[in-house]
Amino acid sequence: MRIPDCPGAFGAGQTAEQAISDAVAGLAAWAAATLKDGGIAVMIPLRLDAGRTVRANLTLDAGLLAVIDVEASPWFDAVGLMASAARDRIRAV
Image (cartoon, one colour):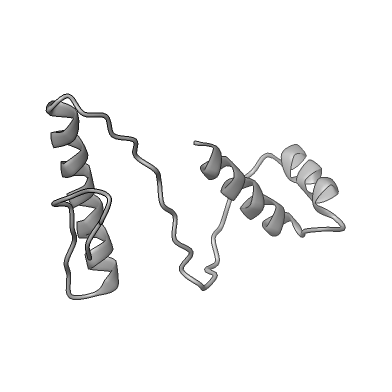
């Protein structure tokens, strides 16, 4: 996997997940070398959806969950609202 905007940065692996993980490490090394040489690098986080959902158990304050339930309807259920809020927060970082 080449990263065209970052000469010399690449990733490889037996699976797509391994290649992506290796590319992330390669990009981090490229950025460190670029910064060491006095260059400027901006890292942009990449979040890839897996395309499937999984069940997760969360522990929340009862009052917070009540507010989430009120705010969620009618557009989202509570889980949809929390997922949307998490995506928004991650994009803002």
